[in-house]
Every structure is written in structure tokens, then in C-alpha cells.
Image (cartoon, rainbow, N blue to C red; front, side, top):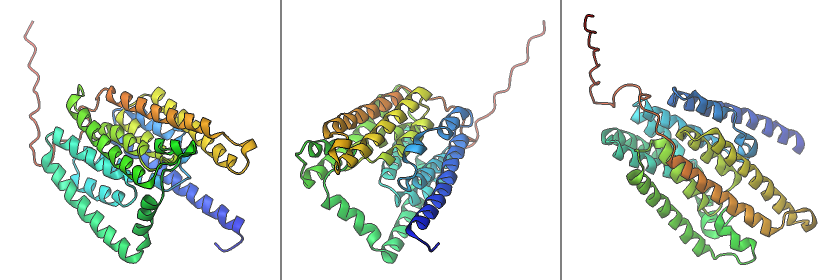
Length: 326
């Protein structure tokens, strides 16, 4: 509503708080319905401190909710709904492309090629239609991200920003090369996970393995990147200890970031660049430990899918043999 700057800011924050709460509840419901035999995972997401750290910094939680509901649709043999949700989410964040590639790898490993085709076609159509519509209605929606990517160097949170913190920033072209290599590394590690793991990972587990690689090797890894890593890791089945340890590191990083930024205007009251470098590298190592935890998380989702895959007959029920007369 009209009013002073302070009044409008309060209204904006209040409305955004309501939207964040609705999206967070939606994510919790999606996890609970996707893993009905592991409701402790939904409890983890509901009580996660990650919302306090990162939920109000960006609208990423909307894209995360779309991805989690797409995973629910996939587990309930609704590939077309999965494709539609992913198609919308693709316009919201680049991390969704890593999630989509994880779906392709998991579906091929699980011999669900027909369902994969029924998911990819709607995803491509929805993304193309909405992308063209947004480009016609607001061309800056697509132009601005490309300008930021190609015109700026590294950003806060990324290991590629460490040289800049030490006074020797990397050229823009080298940052773009490192980002591309990060995507290739995520693809290679995902294929390694599929081929070398002691069990075929689920879509959520493979996503929780590759998304941190894409995020930490991006041009910038902001605080709100935790909104992607934490829900996917929880849906993959990591423990409370791993979850809370990751969030604790995210709290330390977020606090250090604001202290470092404050120190740029008043060095006497801010965090020195060297300490922020240590925390940035420690955060990257923590995400590596998360990937290790996902690798060794047992695949306990057997029997949770509702019904046989689409187009396949239901398996015959086993009839118990009668007990012999005593």
C-alpha cells in the first residue's frame, strides 16, 4: 500500500513472511507424502533452522517447492505432472537443470525410460512456452542474468572468489571456465555415483549429490543456496546430525559474510578478509562431507512407490502357503 518508505518496507516483509511460511509448509508436506514411511524426514525439514538463515533473502523457496512436488509426482508414477512442475521450475533457477539431469540418470539406471520420455516432453514444452512468453513480455528477465554472468567476476561464497578476497581477482573469462568445469565435474561425479555406488541412488539422493557441486562451483554461492542443499539432503535421508551440522556451518558463513561486508565500510568493526576466506573454504569442505554422507545413506525407499510403473501390470501377490496340520 501507499505510504512512507518504512511502512511499505514493513508491508513487503509481512507479505513475504506469509509467502515463505506457505512455501515452507508446502515443502514439508511434499517430503512427507514422498517418503510416507520416513515422516521423521518431514519433521527435520519442518524444524530446520535453515529458514531463519536464508528464506527471506530470495524467492528460491518457490523453485525448491516445485522440485520437491515434482519428486512426489515421480514417486507416485505421474511423469507428466513431474514434467510440468520441472518445466516451471526451470525458469526459476539454474540448479533445476542439475536436478533434471539427475532425473535422467536415475530413470535410465532404474529402467524407467518410458516414464522419462513422458516427463521430459512436458518439461521442455512448458519451459519453452513460458520462456518465450516472458521474453516477449519482459525482455530484461533474460537479458539481466546474462549480463551479470558475463559482465561480473566471482561473487561471495564461491571458492573462485578467494583470490579476489586476497587482492588478486580472477578474470571474468577464467571464472566462466571454472563454472563450466564445475558443471562437468557434477556430471562426472553423478555418473560415478550411479555406476560405483553400492546401490542405485534415488532421484533425491543423486540430486543431493550433484546440486552441491554445481552450487559451490558457481560464480557465486550465496547464503540462500542452503535452501537447495538442505531439503534435497533431507529427502535423500541424511541424519539429523548431518543436517544440523550443515546448517550450523551455514549460520557461521552467513554471519561472517555480513560482518565482512560491514568491514568494507568500517574495518575496525568488520571481519578481516583472511578469516572470511577460511570460512568460505570450510563451508566448501562441509558440503563435501554432505556429499559423502549422501553416498553412504542407505536406500530405504523400497515399497514406498504407489503401484507399478505406468504401462506395466501389477506384480502378482504372493499367496501364503497353508500351515501343515500338526
